Image (cartoon, rainbow, N blue to C red; front, top):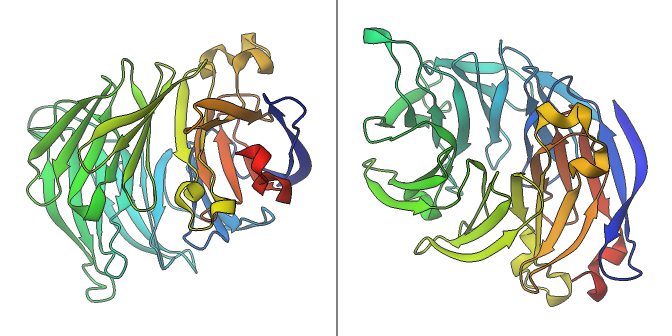
Length: 361
């Protein structure tokens, strides 16, 4: 399940060809939907449309096991900071909680509708709240609306009934959500939508706080920096935007040459060590999956691309996938990254020491 190779980054600056250690992981048989590293960066978690949730070592790609139970595509997963609990949502309309260490399923909740995304809150010492979203399903009295739900999961205190619904946003939700995420200090929740808009909601009352006309096409990606001060969105309109979350103002915009499915800012953008600071925005996407069979890999633009948000120029790209990249994730220390694509492969890249030199700023 693991292939090892040397990947060459095609850099736009003359004469620069850095290498990185790359592992190609065949953990899934269908498209990847999400990749997550734990907080320490030693474990990689993945999920895909084959209904499989996988866990393995980040440093060599060895798979340790899977979390089995879902009967449909798994669209999202998240892990607590202490790496004790994993939550997953699926097309089978369930949200499930797992013990990370053993793979034991602790709780299953019928969410209603296709569950699209889930995320734990960011409280460093009391991470018991989480938010999820699902699409409308059914009709008449049995209809489940488009909704965002805030839950409390406290398995340590209430192992028999650990899950409690704290808030549901449905009537005020104008359309189905693609993804959601917690804002700064867990005071707000952001939702992105196919109409190109992003909404900011109060996490306590469900009141609408802000509407952002973010993009001109469906939003596909939503990520934050670790301190939640910067939000990154991307879209099929071929743009990536950075927003400051204190006032939800756009601070950077990059126009690419391909539809973008996911984007993430290097965790080293604000490093305390100036020699380690990297202002690199990583993104991936490419031609629509339905058209891949008629297009060569180079024309499909399936590379992982690096963009410097200060100099506002592309630094380089790394090839390897032969279908659209669906998800990207940085290692927490910025020493590498992982990408997951439509063909079902994961590529984990570890940078060589040369990456930290000044010529790759």
